Length: 451
Image (cartoon, rainbow, N blue to C red):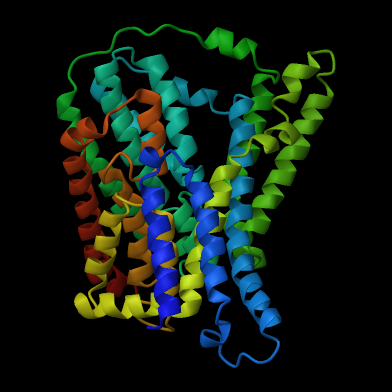
């Protein structure tokens, strides 16, 4: 390994460490990721001929072509995320999720736990797990006044959101990355990961229900105030919900029909929802323009979390540099040698790591470490790629800082790292292992019969 390659690795590892310690350094991880991206590729430019086969006299153009290739692949994920985030925000701001709270209402603590778990699981498969967690915590605040009880429910929201996102091609950032890359298909992850993901949610819910007894106190009804603040009628809100959420469900179908990249389908849904809401708002001119403008797509687009988008850009492009240097392929071969080609152990370890460090660079690294094979475990929808989708998504539940859902719930409900680790970590781990075992049984006994 050359000195230049070692320097690139050191820059990446140091940047990764700063990202992991964001809560201590107080420096936004997006800033670090962008610096990693620039620093790695700047070092790469010192001797690009060492990494590009057949590099001729026109080195600058060849390197630009390489970077643009990786940027194009990264951009498909970024545009998908931006579109999905905007769609969910439009539905939420216009009261599309109000019906969820009505479904949740019950006096039984255990019944509420299961309703929250199931609703979060399936909503996070359609929405992203971060947005689903925010919606469910806000609902919990209306239904559960006792905070010690509420943080138990909130912890279950983290587990259910991460489990639900793992089996859906649009439910988690890492699954979106794998789907965009073409290593898994929508039908493949849904059909083979649904049961393992469901088990990884149900086992913790079954354990946690024994900590909840009795009934809940009657919560204050504040729905009238919220309804008065909405511009749309009940029927219009339902249309917004069906167009937005139904459109997200339609995206994998659109890809299967047209064979266009997923981000094209998400932009189709965004354009349709934008048009529908604009038609509705055209008939609200008599209302306050200021309140209406805050909920229109043009305004909501400016509220997209650009720091998150830039973080993905920086980290994925930095990982692309490692891929171009051949470091990731070498690392993948080393892992295979250490674990003797056992993909259950490799992905299982990656899942545990995803609870400590961000799972986006972990999955991006794996996509660069392992080439897609025509057949076997590394083929499209092979054991390795599906386990990677499951482990990277569900594994983040083991620590409260291990996923975006966990971090946002931690902030909203002020749950301490220590409390979660003592009370929830082992429960999430049991569910994680149970899901892997379920997947192994499916691939060993059910899939051969199906084939």
